[in-house]
Length: 60
Image (tube, rainbow, N blue to C red; front, top):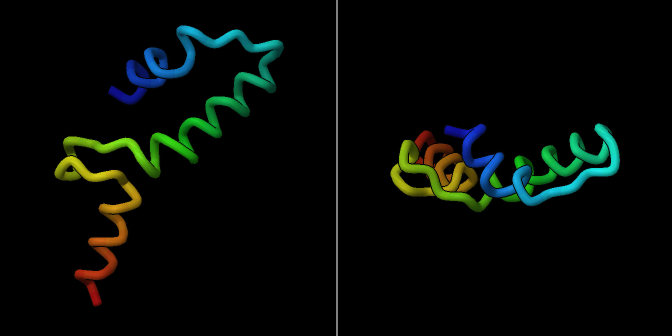
């Protein structure tokens, strides 16, 4: 699941100074890595970005 992955890949080893820093790091993880580069089995082992590009191309 997403939350299990988030904990394993970011939160378990991280030390944040405050809640704002934690929120920013989680946001950056999601927007710059999880949603763009990390492959997902539900998307045919593609990254969400690659899946969206392929889907958009097939609609045209």
